[in-house]
Image (cartoon, rainbow, N blue to C red):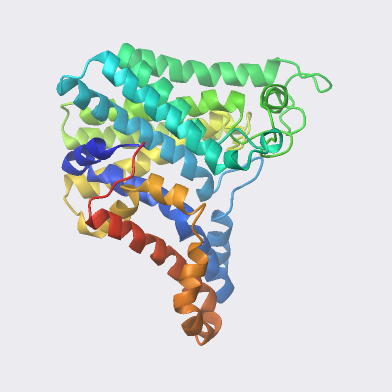
Length: 370
């Protein structure tokens, strides 16, 4: 997660990154339920498709909601070349930067533990693999690679992880199932989660933030790092945009083709998922970058920027604050008199309560960081 210095950098040069992060978080903080509610009011193929896209695809497949976490990690990677370079330009030594990276990683992992119930002290029955933990690990590894290697090494590592992951899943036998079983019960990712992760697994047989899939999640982050290098280059804006579009299309096609043989699955973060999600991420960033930073159309993105600059606050906060009850307190009466539109009004009010809290923080320049 970018801290205040990184946010200032993005505001000065790449507002599109904050807006895209806000777009990512929008679906988590209420956009999904809002668009799903349309199908309750207007039942037609379009609204039904929207509702389906607001749900995760399951073991295999890809919907809009399956892009959210890969896109977020991609953005974490995009920001890194800017933020670490800025720290070096301010005269910070490698030891100081390394300490900063380590502290942030530890805090993210601890936040993940708290989010999953660390303070209940029921540790044997607690889930230990968290979204925050995965972000922290990917951030830490990508930062170190960025500090100590060139871009081509980072690209090689990202590619090697995808190939090794595929080879391991296809050719390493699992007791009782053999090799190449791409099912929740028999795949290598599930077996390693059961073998290594203590406590409760998030999905019973495996964890969506499991051991093996954290490596491929790092590849997602490194693709973001490579994109950050591209954006920091001296190339013309048209070339940067075209490069992201070209890379996005190639990645999308490669991920789709690979997915015909090696399933696209967010739950075990397969190699095909990494490429397919990276394709969409690159295309979205190219669109946001061209419209917002190159053409200068920024006002429309303010709603998203407010969300994006305090992504950690709202993601963590909604776990402990019942925004549904707050929204219902103010609009329940009006919603009851809205007839068939009640589901839309209730879903929209929850989203707006969260946004107004973020707007309050934004106006007062309060940015939560780790």
